[in-house]
Image (cartoon, rainbow, N blue to C red; front, side):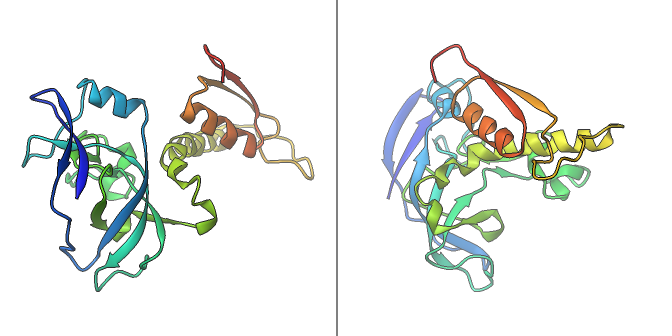
Length: 221
C-alpha cells in the first residue's frame, strides 16, 4: 500500500510502498483511511523543522488529522465493528509509572515528554491506505458527520482548552447569574487570536458554550 513519508536525515518527502498492516493483538482494529487533513504541523514536518521517525526506521509516515472506516477487528474488540466511521487518537501515553496524567488516560497532559504521537513523534501517522491500532484509540463518529468528521482532531484542541476553562471557573468565588433559557456561560466573553482552522473551530465551540466571542485575525477569514 502507498504512504507519504518524510526522511529527516535525507530531508526528503516521498510516496512509498509498504506492507499492508495485519492485526497483531486481540484488541487491534484495522482501519481504511478515508480523509487525512493537512495542517501547519504537517507543513513544518515537511520543512524538516521537527518530526521524529519510530526507533526502528529512518522514515515517518505523516498525517495526524484523520477519518477512517473499520474493516477488521480482533476477537476481543467490543467498542467498534466493521463499517464504523472512526477518528483515531494521535497521542500515546508514556510508560512512566509516576506520570499521573498518562496513567489516568490523559496523555495530552503528559509531563515527562516521553509520549509518542502518530504522524509527529516516534509513531507512524495516517497518510496511508490502512492502519492498525488498539480499539481504545478509536473514537466512533456518526455517519451523518462523514463530510466533516476529519475536523474532530483539531476540534479537540479547542474542547480541551474549554474544559480547562471550566475547571478554573469552578474554583472562583463567583458564577454567572442564572438566566432561564440562556447558555451557562452567557456572562462570559472570549477572544480568539487567529482565524485559521483551529481558531475558527475554537470560536464555534465558544459560541456554542454561550460565550460572547470575538475573533481577531491578521488576514481575511
